[in-house]
View (cartoon, rainbow, N blue to C red):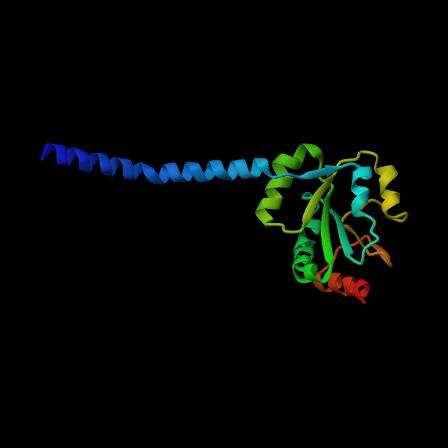
Length: 175
């Protein structure tokens, strides 16, 4: 009887600790996923491949940062556009202008928290006086800013978008 009681005690004690072990395992997996999340980081020369095309695809390239409230507010519009028009040869690319020392502590957690499905790349090029006018000669450098283009048309917008405004602009490229 003592052995049976002892075995029952051991079973209860080991079961009692099981949820904590599972929680620790889940947290460990979460941390490793976050740490392994690859973020493509480019200087302007590397980013250029996302700024031109000879294909029929329409690109929507949004320049934003996690510290920019209007940028964060409009992100769901870009995500909805990506979801709705991805099958219609439209690709949304979110170019983060966050500071490089904030990629791990701010940008990657933000991408995960918001569940961003659009392609996110980071631009790390301190010579903004060189690359801003190459994206658009009239761009003041303020964000949010968006470039929409395909092989036939190119338009730059230094403004925030609602979903309806963004969709209206993209439809002009799909005609």
